[in-house]
Every structure is written in structure tokens, then in C-alpha cells.
Image (cartoon, rainbow, N blue to C red; front, side, top):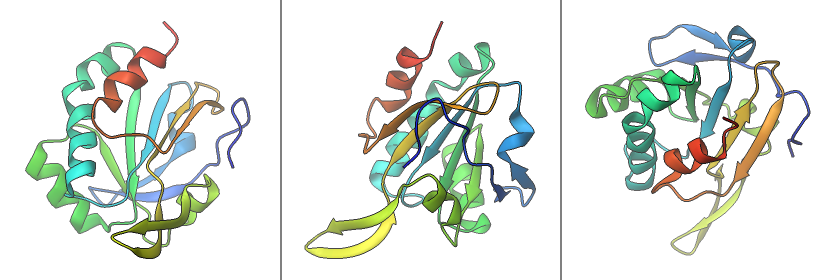
Length: 152
């Protein structure tokens, strides 16, 4: 599991525009890195639209938002366009990044057990360290809750 105060694992993932994105590209800026299970599902849409609606407040504070799920680039393109999401979505189809952050785990839904992402958010500081780890969060109101937890 990721420890607060420790370096955040770097990654290299494809964005919703097909560009290669590395966490290290954002050194010097704080980053909200949120992991979600699946594009265009009720909880994930609620969470993404919360970040969309609060996006200006994040930008005013110089904070980048990155969303990560196992969906592919094409799925991210559709999801981003459909809900007019102004931030980058990253494709982690082999779930290596989710595993490196400790959020790929056994889940239960409708009486079935499967492997998937545990909805989680990491605040990464300007030096690339994990300032805060929020695990197993609830989608509704999460974006504003994250803002409240950020240092002024």
C-alpha cells in the first residue's frame, strides 16, 4: 500500500487523446490522481462529473486532475466527450499502475467476486510525494471533499 510522505510510483499510460503521460511530467505541480472502476457507470460518472464541476477551483490552485481506470483509450474518449470532462483520463488496461498504488484488489458485487479497482484518490505534491491517500471513497461529493483536504 502507498504510504503518505513517500514518493508516488511513477507511471507511463496512454491518455484519452492517445498521448503518453507520465506522473513525472507534472513535477512542480500538485496532482489529484483518482482511480475509478469503469467509464460511464453510475458511480464513476457521478465522481467524474464532480471533478468536472469543481475543475475551475482546482485550476485556480494550480492542481492537475488525472483519472485512471482499466478502460481503453477509445472508451475514455467517449466518456470524456459525453460528459465534457476537462481533465485527462488515463488507460490502465493491464492494471499495473492500479497495482503499484495498491488499489487493484478483490471486490464483491451482486454476490460475485472479481478483481477490480478500489475507488481511491491520491494527492501528489509538487515533489512527487503522496501527500494524502484516500481509499474506498464514495463518489458523490468526493471532488469537493478532496478540495477541503488540500492545504491552502
